[in-house]
Amino acid sequence: MTVAEQAFEQLMRLAARERPDFVTFDEGPAGMKTRFHAEAAAAAALAAGGTLAADIWKQRSGQDQDVSVSTREAGAALVSFALQTFEDPSRAPPSRPDDAGGGGRGTPAMGFFPTKDGRWIFLHPSFPASAAKLHQLMGSPADAAAVAATTLTWKALDLENAIAAAGICGAMVRSPQEWDASEQGRILAARPLVEVVKIAEGPPMPLPLGGEAALSGVRVLDLTRVLAGPTCGRTLAQYGADVLYVASPKLPATEFFVSDVGHGKLSTWLDLTNEADRTRLNELIAGCDVFSQGYRLGSLQRMGLGPLDLARLRPGIVYTSINAYGHEGPWANRPGWEQLAQTVTGLAHVHGGYTFGGEKGPQLQPGAVTDYTTGFLAAFGTMVALDRRARFGGSYLVRVSLAQTGMWLRGLGLAEPGHLDAIQPPTPEEIDGWRIDSDSGFGRVRHLRAPVTLSATPARWRRPTTPLGVHEAAWPS
Image 1 (cartoon, rainbow, N blue to C red):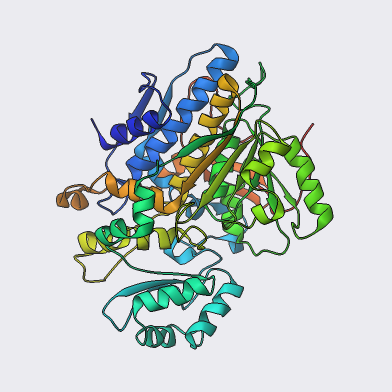
Image 2 (image 1 turned 60 degrees about the vertical axis):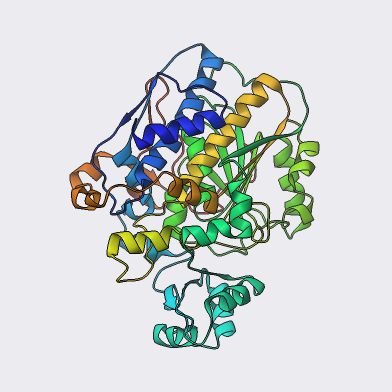
């Protein structure tokens, strides 16, 4: 049994079902320079989502279908933001995921830096406001050499704690053993990779008959940001859901991420600090099926938008929550990103040592391996909840995290050392075969298609990607 098949069977057990016979994997040679099975994990998560879409479609129509996923195409999906081609050359995205950051590229203080105790820390300035706070904390100008000199005056854990206390982003590099022995690591190890929990009782709510896709008529409110959360919404949209992306006009965004994860969605502005906009959001919630959010722990609860609040407002809701470090424990409210999930869970430590012989210190894998995969897993968990709601009734909470995904990926093991010599990066012609053209709100764009194949209800986006806030705060008729 291949790693992709093993990972897929793990996900099927989470969904309380046997491995279906209608799912196949097209497993070509690895394309990413890493000994972790990142492509296999992404393919398994995509296949799991496709399986649930096929199951839901059969409930709606009685029709069977086949599902297939290519591991090489799944690997490309882990850098999909970098594989967009715009007619307008000024919109070109970065070529490497570690250039992208959370809010842009070219930030001097972003990356791995050694500390005075012989450790390493990853600094993530994120968006401009948090970058300013980071530089203020460290007392260094926005210059890479000055930042490096300043980190050498800190012990790594002291700097990590100071960053956490300031509410900004950075983390000390840990080995797998260190993370697993930590309080947060132990808490995550005791939780499922994807949590699907019934939080309120209610009658069964079957999806309507008809429609052209598994999630036709399902309404999803998407209150997430870079990158895992929006990937969840984009994945649900490829199965027919009406996804309304809700962005705040007060929060910064990065255009090449917005264009990448906006396929299939409507997009509107709502300022949750404004009473009228909160009222409008509550009206939208009353008519939705899924509420997907990526805010820091407690932020929405203070506004009366926690899981139990919404289960009372909209009985039968599926509340999907996505964060960096898990939803319980001392790290639950820390802000974080893809790079930091790799940093704390031991992925960067292992990847730097095994792939580069440790000469370069810790290194990130060449893809947003926890971001996109977590988004695929969140969509899978959301569809598990929708399926259970249809059959058994109730309201559901779905929880995933980047760190949990990182631990799962690490648990799939390492390829043999000679694996690195056999890696075959996708050719330009191969990548182009996975891409499609769209007339979008960003102009003509060539981008990756939905990376899973369903024989009866092809995964596709029925709406083009758009800039933020171009639609009304309303459900389509």
